Image (cartoon, rainbow, N blue to C red; front, side):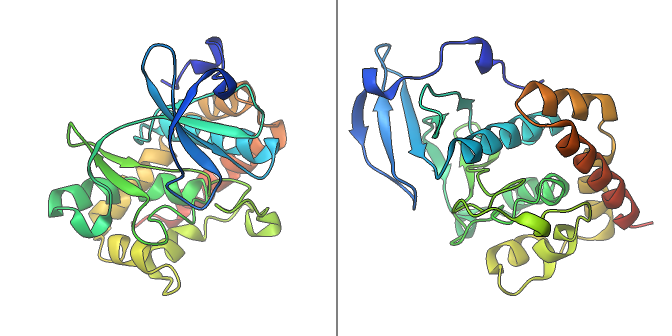
Length: 231
């Protein structure tokens, strides 16, 4: 099930208290609402980039891949996630079991072209208080790079990320995380995506601001990924 935050009032940072600063490269801050809940809010390059990240989060949720809890914002170029205290916030801190959890979502990262799945410093994977491994930021998925540049033709119908996340020396933290996955692990990770019904993918994309063309592109990527699985 995807989040239903679109049915709730969007967050208005103008009516909230800023209680902390940015933790990354985007202009951002930690905000507290009237109920005492805290939200990490970043301002991205454009409203379209914000919509792209929101949609990516919903597709992660559709596939069952844990992320931070996203919430819509009133400002169209803002992205908000509920603040969580993490047990671990770097891949270098992960146990073997936690690394195995993280590897299970390789297929989702590849399908959605999240080049930043592991993070520039291994800082895009974390462990929640209950032991769940989370992807901490999905701003580099789908049509935009994490810093906001459009991917253009680099985001097509081929899921070359399936190999690149495991092999690219220019993405060292992803390579160290995914490179040693055996055939059974790769098969299980890919089937997370290939098992998604086409109608559910289309409905998720259209419901959360995507276009019919993007829905068809993701279905083509799903089919391409199926051909790449072991066996």
